Image 1 (cartoon, rainbow, N blue to C red):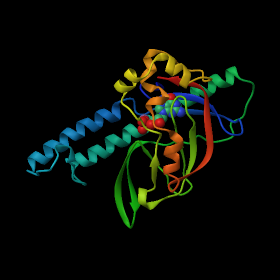
Image 2 (image 1 turned 180 degrees about the vertical axis):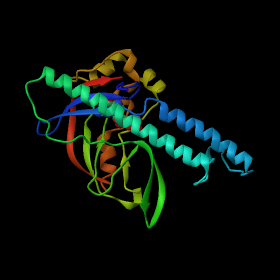
Image 3 (image 1 turned 45 degrees about the horizontal axis):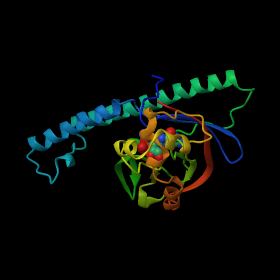
Image 4 (image 1 turned 45 degrees about the vertical axis):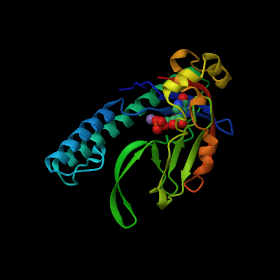
Length: 244
Ligand SMILES: Nc1nc2c(ncn2[C@@H]2O[C@H](COP(=O)(O)O)[C@@H](O)[C@H]2O)c(=O)[nH]1
Ligand SMILES: [Mn+2]
């Protein structure tokens, strides 16, 4: 516990439009959630065969609500979500401890905004209890605060949800990639990475070339497409980025 993970996971120090400092951290269940998903996908496929249910695609396999496997899945996923939350809290506490040691005395003005972005939850929508899976998405209920990061060289946004029922009260959790990691490594050089992260204290080596800002969609455009889902509360720009 207390480890960031690799890929697009990051810790950043950002300034908002009023020069307030924000610590932003993106990390999940460190692979356990993914393993749980794979395990239960296999089980769902076997269940379809056992019950002779023929689907157009085997990835459409499902577990029946109320069955032992379904309940096991919900329990396992909930465990992974709790683990991810604890992991983030541990890292955030360590980051704040270091900042307190290194910076002039400061006060925390805001409670942490926490949002899961790959998760399952039972919610009430349109007069029914339904299971919602949000993948690369966060919940954006009316007045709920959330985080939408851009890339290691772009702005990020603190948002307030509008509770739009058409998206089941959800919004995107980021710009999202515009090209694969392999394509990014072919398309860009370390010099491009240095140019696209100018002014930001961060890794600028071959090892993070697949995370280059140019491999992500334009976050401002993405935000403009979800104006019916969220309103922007703060705009953040990183000064330090740490990739796992
Ligand atoms: N501010 C930063 N944003 C980043 C960085 N690397 C990626 N990203 C953005 O975060 C989301 C994460 O969403 P996920 O569902 O893919 O996990 C991603 O889409 C990017 O837009 C970064 O170093 N700093
Ligand atoms: Mn993620």
